Length: 68
Image (cartoon, rainbow, N blue to C red; front, side, top):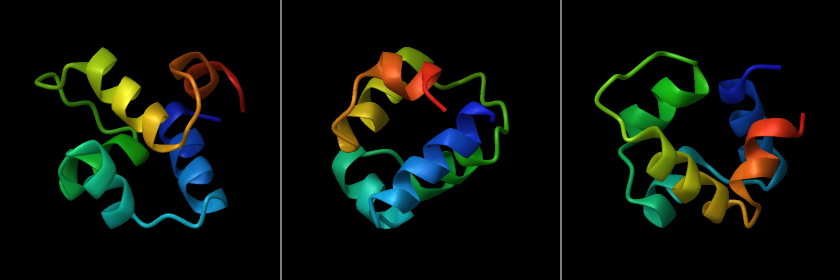
């Protein structure tokens, strides 16, 4: 499972829409779609971005990265 697939699975398991995650993280909808589709974006601060996404799901960044 890729990181993007894992993020999408977590979001859907928590019954959250992209808009919900956008509201919590402050990330744009297009950025979140790119992340879920594993589209590289060299302008992202990936550490900060993953921290925000993990916080939205109430999990650690470690769990976001390593647990399928």
